[in-house]
Every structure is written in C-alpha cells, then in structure tokens.
Amino acid sequence: MSDGVHLIVPFAGSSAAGCVQALRGLALPNLQKLLARLQPAGSDAGNAESLSMPHETALARACGLPAADGLVPLAAWQVRQQGGDPGQAESGAGTASGAGWAWITPAHWRVGRDRIAMAHPQELALDEAYSRGLLAAMAPYFTEDGIELRYDTPTRWLARADIFRDLPTASLDRVGGADIDPWLPRSAAAGPLRRLQQEMQMLLYTLPLSEERERAGHLPVNSFWISGTGALPPDAPAQPPASLRVPGQLREAALVGDWPAWATAWQQLDARECAQLLQDLDAGRAVQLTLCGEAHARTWASAGASFWRRAAALFNKPSAAALLEAL
Image (cartoon, rainbow, N blue to C red; front, side):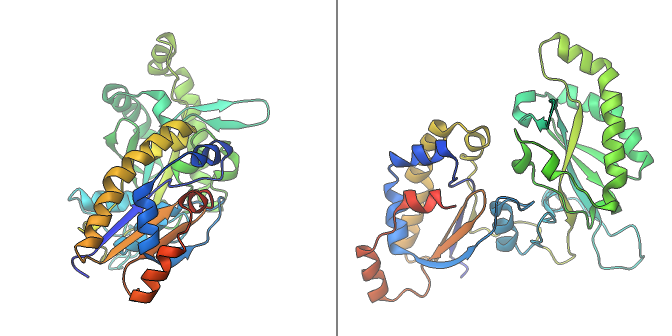
C-alpha cells in the first residue's frame, strides 16, 4: 500500500553472550506492543556464515534489488542514489547488464601468529586528507588492473570494474574485528584482487603517509577490503521506497561488542521508531517490522490479521528478548 510503513532494524539481536546478558534486563515496551499487535509475515532463516548480512538482504528485497548472497549491489546502488550513472557492463556491447561496482575500504590487518584479524574501520579514525592521499598513491595500481577508483568518504571508496559484476564478497559488517581468512574471496576470478592486495601491503608498508601515522600513534592502513559487489539491473529503483525506515543506531555498538551501549541505543530506538510505528498502526496505515540479527531476519505485518487473531495475540505475547536473542 502506498501509505504503508516498513521498519527494518539491523543488528536487532545476537547470540553473543554479552548481548544475551544485556537482553535480560532490557525493557522495550513499544516493541513488545508491536509484536503483540502484528502477525508473523515471513522469516529469512539464514546463517552466520553467509557473506551478506540479514539486514542487507532484507533491504535489497524491500527495494527491489538483487539479493544473492555476497552480490547485493550496494555500491552500484549508491552511485544511482547519488544521481550518477552506474553504466553498462564493459564486455558485450548492447547488453542489458549493469557495470560492476564495489566498495573499497582502507583497512588495518593485525597479523598474528595463527590468524589475521581486521581492525574495526572506526579504529583508524581516518580523515579526508589522509584518505585522499592513500587513494592517490594506490589508484595507479588499480588502474593497471582495469579498476577505476573514486573517493567517497574517508573510510570508503567506490570502485568500478567488470570483475566486480559476479564476484561474491563478504560484508564489511562480517569482518570488522574478526579473522579475515574465512571471508576472503577464493574463486579463480578473485586472483587479480588477491595479488593487488599483496601489492598494496608492500606499497603501504613503505609509504611515507603510513610512517607519519605510526609516528603519531595511529594505526596504519596496510590493506583494503572489498564489499558491496554486484551490478545494478537497468530497472532498479533510483531511491528506496519513501515508506522504508532503516535506523542505524545499533550498528556501531554491536560491531565492537559494546552491549551496554547497544542496549541503551535499543531503548532510544524503542522510544522513537517503535513508538512511531505504533502511531502509524493506530492511524490505520499498513505496517511491517523486520528485525535482523547476525544470522536471521524475521518480519511481522499488520495486513491480513483478523479481529480474532489480533485479540488472541494480546494473550499470547511473544517475548521480545527471546526473539532478539534468536536472531
């Protein structure tokens, strides 16, 4: 319905021990009311090993984008949303396939004896001047492999190349603070990118910009991460539906495992976004709620609920804490 509202909540829950403990004392009265009044409308029973996060897949489906694991074309869609032209594929003149795009994230890889872990991007505290300096130093090497780099933000660049059209990659939200080995692309098509990562590690090790950061006590950038790969279909929308709301305040705390801060952010989200959704429901608007965790996503909706089902739901209220923990 044109006047409907869809709230997608990323990082709504986790099975992490700290999250489970935080949920035990977490009061979310508006969410509890919503769950009592809405009806289950579908679930995405994924797993914590999927390349794409559940909220990315849910967003893609809500916006009419491809939703294959590791190939949600978020970078290409960003170009479209910003008024740019994602373009067509480099190979096959006249094809209806879109060009390949990716996000490139400057990264710090912590090399240990048995594993390599990636620092959370926010730990780098990059500014625009430093990020642009890195891009200028690295771009010629990417160009040699047919990859065009564009500055976007200090912690994210846009990259265009045919290689990104069909190359599944792991979401940055999967690898921050984690061992990178399970998430590296292993296909033969990714060979040039693995070589490029090795070249950049050697370049960045001796780059004066890196030495300056280390002298200042900051983590140096010593590699990069690829995510958001894929191609945008020609008929993909230029913007998300006006009815879609995707709050992001749970993300930062969840990624660093700061569960007390995450619980506080949830209370704020409950007081604002969930309260607003209740008002929308009271106003007779069609309402959908999608809660996304590290493995699963579940959706509830107002459409199709009979009076007797709504009445029964009031006496069989699901526990918000149990639902969030199971995500």
